[in-house]
Amino acid sequence: MKDLHDLELILTSHTPIIVIESLEEVRVAQMLAQLGLRLDYPMYQWAVTEGLKRLEADFGAQKFTSEPAEVLKHIKAVSQPGYYLLLDFHPFLDDPIHVRLIKEIAQEYENLSKTLIFLSHDLPIPPEIRHLTARFTLRLPDRAGIKMLIKEEARRWQSRHKRKVQADPIAVDRLATNLSGVTATDARRLIRSAIENDGAISQDDLPGLMKNKYELINQDGVIAFEYDTASFAEVAGLIRLKEWLSHRHNAFTNKTNTADRPKGIMLLGVQGGGKSLAAKAVAGTFNVPLLRIDFGALYNKYIGETEKNLRGALDVAESMAPCVLWMDEIEKGVSPGHSDEGVSQRILGTLLTWMAENKSPVFIVATANDIERLPPELIRKGRLDEIFFVDLPQSAVRREIFDIHLRRRNQAPSGFDLALLADSTAGFTGAEIEQAIVSAIYAAQAQDKKMNTEQLLEEIERTSPLSVVMSEKMENLRAWANGRTVTAD
Image 1 (spheres, one colour):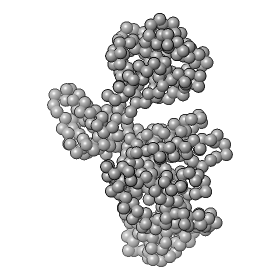
Image 2: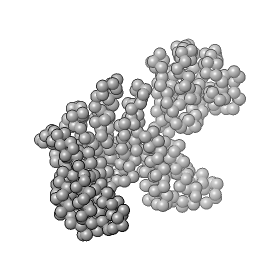
Image 3: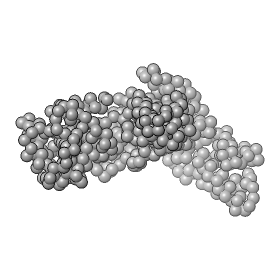
Image 4: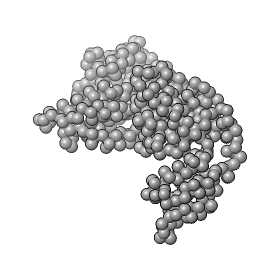
């Protein structure tokens, strides 16, 4: 009901143009029809397919109002106040005649209050009329709102089938928590799908619903849900990082401890060194969802859209809190480019503002390969809690990595000389060790033999690790990290 109240305030605020960016067209139209009756003002709706008609009562469409210019001229000529909901008008805002007509209607508002309400999934407003507009944002439902939707859908099912929905209270509670981050329309559809088949809400419904939810979140490719949140037991080494996280686990998950809640960490290191796996494992340690921002997908050819994409992704993260937000290869998004027209600086500004103002339990894990490309504003103390340097694994850790990846591929570690393999892979990253195991398995299968230590050593001998190929760059990275970061191992 808060959305309805806020929308009413905007409608009565004497603003001639209201902009609503939302995919929930039906829900917004229903809210406006309800407010039209409450405010005792005629509420009209226009679509290019139907023309102009009353929204709260079906009196038929007005003639000759299908074209954008026609409907705007009609509204301008009307001699009584009213609200006009214009659906999907965004393709027509490039026409200077349409913009001029909108401006003239808005400028006459003080003499005759005719409010234009633009509703679409995306509405870039021309600068000529921007000062005459107000924006309304439809909230994503919170946990209490989703519980209300569950009750409504249960009552609807009961009315159709003449029997009660069998609801597991724990499953209902988890469903209300896990459906945060989607629109009310999508939440209602997912709830309905859980109830419809068997008239019940059970633990068995949750995995399928969550998969559908995360597919919805990832539709634009900017923010994605990571299914594979590896347990921290699967990460070799990183002893200091694990200890640091264990000390802050309760502070992050405690809802009452908002003042000193951990903000996040940066993981700096070479490619393949285990930063991504560690990021996934943080979510497993905290037992919360893991979201990943793809900075490459943020960029958009339209000026201003990139920052908007980032704000949308951050809104999703807040709505899913508590969660871990993994900003992978963050330097690709915030390092100044030669021809990005200041986009990277605006992304950085948007991100820093959010980091300073965010009160939701969103733990940031930023991973970076090239510290020299990161702006100093991001890595100074206070932005994040700590910077950890993930160096190449030492011998004992390499042995553990072999053990983990051999077990993962149904190979008994006891059948291999792990000490010899660890000594033979000095300077290897965890990813390079894993790839050597994969290559050895293929070679053994091709020879119709069981993989052994000798085959692994042959694959290791063929591998040129990054520590050799990019030795100068790695030494520079280590030199920068010395004294500036905390060693993760």
